Amino acid sequence: MVRNVCDDKWPAQKKDEFTWVNTMTNPVIISQDGTKTWPFTLPSPIDVAGQRSNGQPGRTDCGILDALRGNYTYNVYTCGLEGNPKTVIIS
Image (cartoon, rainbow, N blue to C red; front, side):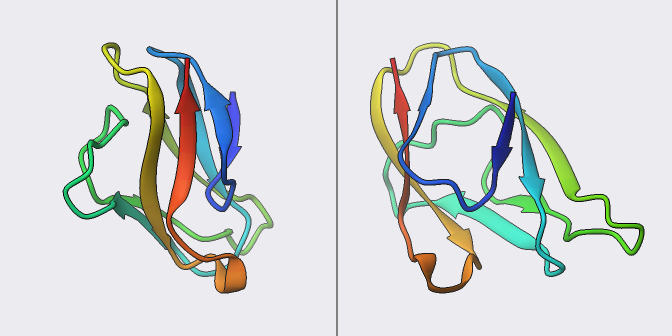
């Protein structure tokens, strides 16, 4: 599964594996929302490179932790005017 770094309110299942994709030229940082539970298998912060000069998006493989269910928020710097926090909905 591919997930754009600026997506918000997206569905996932526990133990899902996916790839963060960044189509912007600037790199982004995905980080924990304060002290709220971090839902991803990679530690915070996650760096996702910007789009390469050949037009290929930046990519980082990731996953959802096994024991989680519910709504989890995190921050992405920067997705322009889209704002933070972002939410993943784990069922």
